[in-house]
Image (tube, rainbow over all chains, first blue to last red; front, side):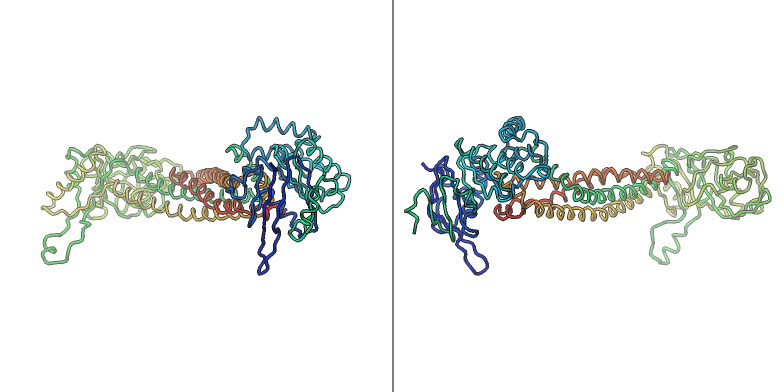
Length: 232
Length: 402
C-alpha cells in the first residue's frame, strides 16, 4: 500500500473572470520512505500540490489517500489532527515564531497536540541534540543564522515523528553552503525512513532526489519512476 | 492544546508587543478608573449628606407649623383651616408623651449682636436646655442654656464658635455682656465648631432662651419644635402622638406637619444613589470604548500575526485552539486593564479623601463589581470577532503572508 495515493486530483482557482487550472487530472502514488523532488517553473502547480499533500488545501475533485485513508472528506478538525501527527512542514522562509526561543519553537507542535510539559522538554532536548542546536536552545530566531533557523524549523517539523516531511524550497533563503547542509540533513532523515518530498526549482537539488516529478501548467509532465506512463 | 499552554501562549503573545498591549491595557484601565472614581464621588456625596443628617441628632422628629397638604379654596375651607401657630405651650405639652425623650422649642430670627466694640448680624435661635442633647452639640467653654421655665427666659446667651472668634478673638467670652437687639445678655457658654446643619451654620448662631427670642422678635410663635424619640422604633409612635396632641390643642385642626429625619434622609439617599448610578453609566461608556479598542488591537494582532496563524494551522492547530488563544489574549488585556484601573481608581479616591477629608469618597461595592464585570465582558465580547477571524483564516493564504 502506498503512503500517498492521489487519484484524479483537480484544483481550480477563480481569479476574477478567468479560471486557472492549478492541477489537472493528477494521479501519483508515493511509497513510504521515498525521496521525491517536485520540480517545475513557477505557476506550474507544484506549491498547490504540496499544499494539497499537506492538507492545507482541498482538491476540487479526486481522492487523496494518506496511509490508505481518504483524507479529502475529513472535517477541518480531523485534518488538523492528521497534520499534527502525520505531516511535517519545512518552509522557505522558516516560519519561526519570532517571540519564542528555538526550544519553544520546536516544542510548538507538541504543545498544540496537547502533550505534557515534561515529555515536551525531554523530546525538545533530544531534538536540540540531534540537530546540533544545544547551545542555541534559548536563542530567539533573530539571534540565529539562516542555517540555524532552518535546522530549528526541521527539528520542529520532525518532533512529532510524522510519516511525511514536506519541504517547500527549503534552501531558497540560504546561501549555497548552508543550503547543502540543510539538504544533507533532510537526506539523513530520509535515510532513517522518513518520506521526504521537496518542492524546488533548483535542478541541482532536484537531481539529488531518487525520484523527480516535473510539473507544468498543472499537469504532471514527467515522473522518473514511470518514464513512459505520463509522457503524454 | 492544554489550557495552561493556551494561557501561556496568549501571555507571551501579549507581552511580545509591549506598546500595543500597554496602550490597550491603559484604555481599559482608564475606563475602569473613571467608573471607580466617579462612583466614589457620587457615593461620597451621598454619604456626606447622610452623615450631615445623622449629625442633626438621632431619632429626630421635627414639627412645622401649617399643613403641607393642599386644600381646595372654598368658603368651607376658609372657615375651618385657619392654621394656628406653634407655641411654647404646645412644645411643653409634648414633653409628657411616653415615647418622647426630649423636646426643644425653636424660635428663630435675625438680629444684631454688639459686644467688645464690634457689631455683627447674627441668626438668633431661641430654644431650651434640651436642644444641646437633641442636636448632640458639645460645649467648648461654659455651659448651655440653663434648665427652667420655658416661658420665662434668663438673660443669657450661648454663642457659636465663629461668632466667638470674630467678636472676642482669643479673649475670654464666657461671662461677658453682649447686646442683642435691645437686650443685654450674659454669655454663659461657647459651642464647639460643628458646621452646617438644619439649613443654618450653627457656628454663626446665638442661642438664647425661647422666651427671650420671642420677646426680641415680638412674637409668641415657634419656628420649629424638635423632638427626640426614645428609640428609632418609636419614631412612628412619636409622629402619631404628637399629631394627636397638637390636633387636640389646636381645636381639632390638624394644622401642623411632622417630618422625620428618616423621610428626608431617604429622599436624599434615593436622589444621590440615582445620581451615582447616572455618573457610573456615563463612565461605563468609556468602558465600551475601551472594549472596542481591545477589539481593534486584536484585529491588528490577527493581521500582524497572519503568518503565525497559518503556521499554527500547518502544525496541526484546530480552529478552536487558535480562537481560544486569541480570546485568552483579549481577556488578559481586559483583565490586566481592569485591575490596573481598579488600583488607579482606588488611588484616585484616596487622593480625593486626602484633599477633602470631610468627603468620604469610597467607591461602592456594586460599582466596583459592575466596572470589573463590564470590562471583562466587553473585552471578551469584542475579542470574539477577531478570534473567529483568526480561526477562519485560510492556511495557504496565511502562510504566504510572512
